[in-house]
Image (cartoon, rainbow, N blue to C red; front, top):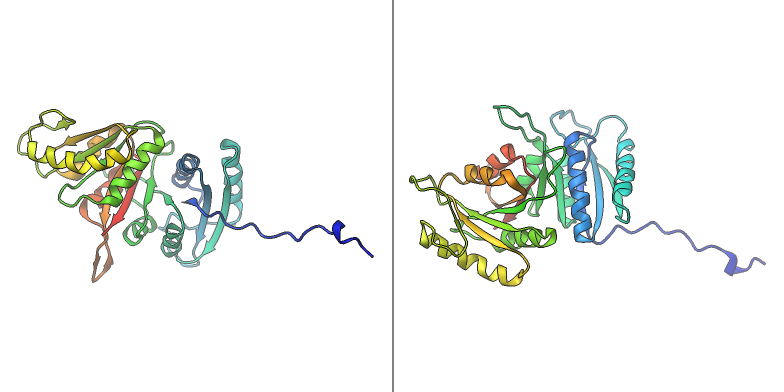
Length: 292
């Protein structure tokens, strides 16, 4: 009789990690930039990285997150490169067939964060963001980061675009936690509207040109500064169009954070004007945090 102690235990399929950063992968330069950014983010958070490859049987050639050719080839090769560049990081691949935006929204709901590559046209015409990325941003109720640059910035501060008329805890917490994870300064930018001729002024504890806005900004920041005492925070009141002022502020940033108010119309979920402008024109990795 065979000794039961010599029989190897059955091999169980590995369970998916409880916490992950998920990144959409299609082999394009934009998605590979997103993989690089997401791998660094997963290491900062101490969670696993999930490479999600989605392909569709439909004819939509405009979707940047639909695989072409053999869908099983590049996710595994990319995973091996990530493991080589980030020893000790748990990297998983997942492949799904379906409507890409729906699959990615489901992945966002099951992840700490979803990261996508966004493609750019460059030049005076600005940028075009892939239809899938736009659809996911409009529909998901979870944070999403879009990465455009093939070599996304690893330094710089975190810039938060804040609407003082509707400051949201979800957006503030995300921005403070990102600055804390990175050991980076946090710059909170508020633009009250079209400029009346005043120059933009930094608001820390000094005397800005708009004391009322400065006091509101200080009140909003104060409790979060108490919760994240290691984060160095400055505020800026930048009169002018909010999207334009955020684009200027993003030039030296490592990450830009904006909120997106969840809204629906008869045509379905949509995004506001500031979000759309930032999606199309921001070169810096852009985090979009939905809120009610």
